Amino acid sequence: MNIQIFGTKKCSDTRKAERYFKERGIVFHFRDLNEKGVSKGELEKIRRILPLEELIDKNGKQFAKRNLKYMVYDIEEELLNDALLFKTPIVRNGMDVTLGYNPSAWKSWIDNQSG
Image (cartoon, rainbow, N blue to C red; front, side, top):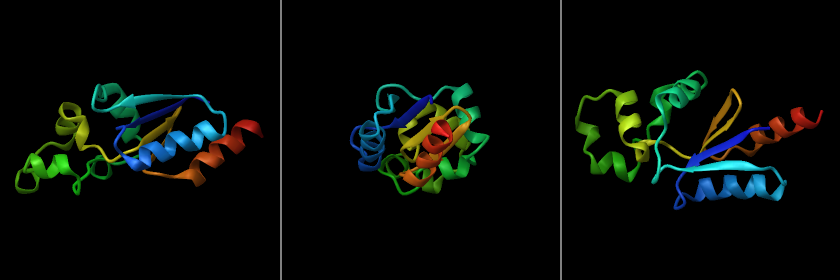
């Protein structure tokens, strides 16, 4: 398994995702979106599974702060330029991707790995 968790340290669902994998002894790589955003290539891999519209957090502080509710914008461009607009956590395992806290999907990854 090659688990990557994209999120922020302040996000409770991101912390729960980290705890989920730690409790099962699964090594993961954490990407703090406060420090480093998502590359165009990474975004391409994520959007193969999840539509861009689902990735942007329209209820988040950053969306409101930037007044995007009242603007016409390119979602991909905004996400690449401001990683704090992502809903979190985004959890990747190879080509599989989940958005938010999703232990049932992660369990299936573990079960398929050990089976």
